[in-house]
Image 1 (cartoon, rainbow, N blue to C red):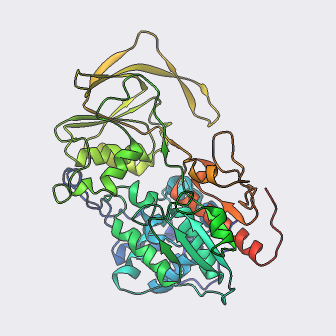
Image 2 (image 1 turned 120 degrees about the horizontal axis):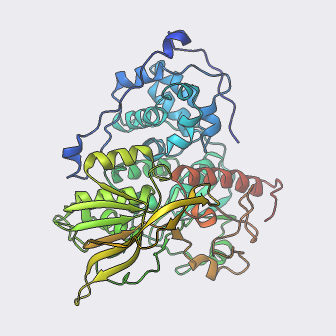
Image 3 (image 1 turned 135 degrees about the vertical axis):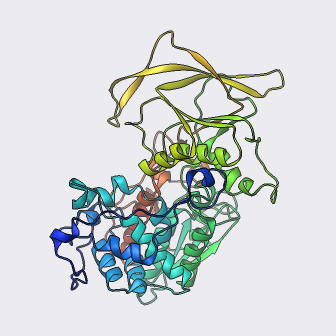
Amino acid sequence: MSNPPTKVPSHNPLPNKERVKLPRQRVPEQEPQVRAHNFQEVNLGFPEEQARQESLRCIECSKPGCIEKCPVSVDIRAVIDLILAGDYLGAASKVREDNALPAITGRVCPVDDQCESGCVLGKKGEPVGIAYLERFVADWERETGQFGSPVSAPATGKKVGLVGSGPASLACAGDLIQMGHQVHVFEALHELGGVLVYGIPEFRLPKEIVRHEIHVLQRRGVVFETNVVVGKTVTIDELMQDEGFDAMFIATGAGLPRFLKVPGEHFNGVYSANEFLTRVNLMRAYRFPEFDEPLYPCTDRDVIVVGGGNTAMDSVRSALRLGARSASIFYRRTLVEMPARKEEVHHAKDEGVHFEMLVNPVEFLGDEKGNLTAVKCIRQELGEPDDSGRRSPVPVNGSEFVTPCSVAIIAAGTSANPLIQSTTPGLATTKRGYISANEETLATSKPGVFAGGDIVTGGATVILAMGAGRKAAKSINAYLTGLVVVPN
């Protein structure tokens, strides 16, 4: 549910008929031939003057579709007006009222399908660059050492535990601390951020940015604890019964990789995208030889990535930067059906990634030493739409072919890690092993326990997980303050 836009005097000096004539500003970025060989950030962000010029394009709709389309309901109109007023700290504070991670979402949000898809300007031209403006104010805040924090409510004395430190949990933590509750986040790994640090490459989301946003939450009072595997180190029941937590929010994500279940996936060089990106990002393979490379080497090898989502793009572009001789996407549908962000596909093409459409692997081939040497595929054609609305791929008989490769990365989605579900009596799950939660409240079958993000819905985007975190915070607050919460 979105909030109504804040009514503020406009700081835009242009009439609407002049605003619609302004071209969309192009964010500066590294040249493709340079960035394809380093892990530095591709998009460089708006300088101040470009941010102002882009802000001038907003026509201040009376019913802003951008806010309606934003999963965390950022008051985009008010943010843009504060930019035009030159109050960048105020703009950052306004964003943080609804979005605990603006520097992150400003980099990785799939805006094509969300806020920018609701911009009226996009009907006849290009929408306002909302994510770039959000990134601008968050980066300005960080670079100037200032801190745009919304005002928190008086302390309630209630204590909430959050499991996992990914986007759903961080968004929930930001709202709960603002509501006056004590917030304690438990992370199984040694570094905070969940998928933000192990799943998204440095060139798209620098780890420094994630650390800063978490530091902001720490300054606001959120307590973080790493190396705690809830379900093994300590259980949900122990946290509530022995350590005094009044409510729990489970946001452990969906980190169990899926494979294709075809012959040959055991060969050395075949990875799940989850493992590959974790080794690259969290274990710092991208900084070899400064750090030992915990990775079957991509250097001077032919690499294929199976899949068409953002994870596939992250994987293939990482392989290229690790020195792959060739890096290719193998996808069973066409570019039209590909779910990856348009910007990521565009960047991949510019960097030299090859796209092989309408193909599906049926077998991986290897040598006597157990190393991958090739992949056997079959060509596809599109049939009728499936449940997602995309046309289903159908194999073309007799179209098999073999492509040499030494590394194959399977980006075919993930499923739920069963650890917490298996160690929490009374916690209902779905047939696929995800935690069952009420769609409106995110309450589980266990009193005082809520769940959201990928562990409930399956793999989705950062911003959708954050939306779930905000929804959970609202329900947890209602539960803690004695308001009625619809049971699961």
